[in-house]
Length: 95
Length: 416
Image 1 (cartoon, each protein chain N blue to C red):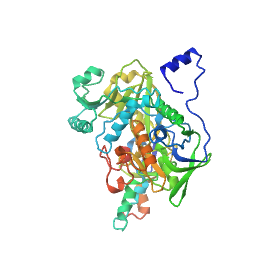
Image 2: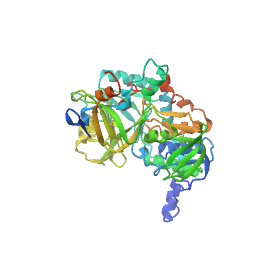
Image 3: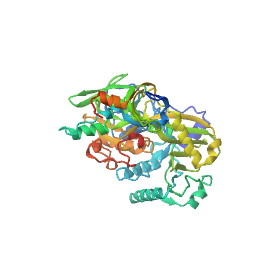
Image 4: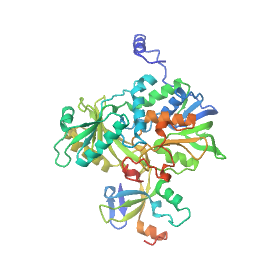
């Protein structure tokens, strides 16, 4: 698979480390009344779709950026690649 | 029809006119006591033991494609029970004991071959870890033997013992481990279940569950509604897709695992061997092909095919261990979809829906578990209590912090 890095262009997927569903960006509020349950669901449960999947890849063999890659899990076709930091900021995360 | 040597001779003398299909092709009835979803090894074993050991009468097994078309026909056929943790070891030993009597039990030649499995040691730390694992096995009454380099040289003279980077320092052997003809496992269980009245319904896809007031009343399928008092799901890599129809999110990701077969060679590798410095495991089939595999590709996939970086990684492992295979040509390679759980261990449990049961999360070690998985799932379905060796395989272990994490890598499915 070739991942089209927004800054570095086409890179081989073997340069990357895979983490999983990009929903991991949305870390629950640890002060919430339901924090224990929220963190259990955040940590362990997955949608695991057959089809388009937004997921986190880390460019360990490159610029060490985190990317959000939208990839079809049935065909392995990649339709979009974003910098994870931009995605996190657009969702109101400060870091 | 019972298979036997006498029967083979009789048929040979009478022109092979007496053989009948190994199982029927029934149409689905309106309702059953128990419906098992998934015609792979685990589902077929479940149906077989429900009928044979638990006296259930009205059973159907429904399968989207044809039976044995998924992972039971795609694996590297290894059986073993060399686990470390208490939640796992008695279960896998129960499974190995069932393998040992399986062919007589279901009257089918599954070519169970206890040729032994050898896990190689390359570092001092690894030796400590394997001694610990061997001791844990023996505490559970399972055979384990630590082998010296000289003992390994006797049986495997072709290893690269003195490799500069990955020297072989010893190995942990389980002599009762081995291989089984994987397709025959599916066929044997299917035939055994069919003979005991189980309806095996192929080309019948589940499109939904009929759930009313928190109770499962049956399944909607491509061949109409089938009512059931209890429904058991054993669909491996499709677990997430199927259980989503019951509004469940699972502690499971689906990943692709590749496996490989070389051209046929003369007998050269006597047992099952695993390389300890990378991830490579190999045995030789009775047809002569080297059957081998390694890691999963590492990303969510339903594609049943992998990519080239893992092919290179697996073959590098093989070359580091036994350079003699470098001239063997690869005949076939393929991928299967693994239900990778969050701690690397399986789930055999009820769900939040009454009458709906789940069996999955086998990661890429489900084949060896087939008999025990079927037996324990049948126990749960029939008696509504978990079998004593499968009590740890619960859904709520993640929320309660009772993970069974053999590798100790945490909630990261692609590391198990």
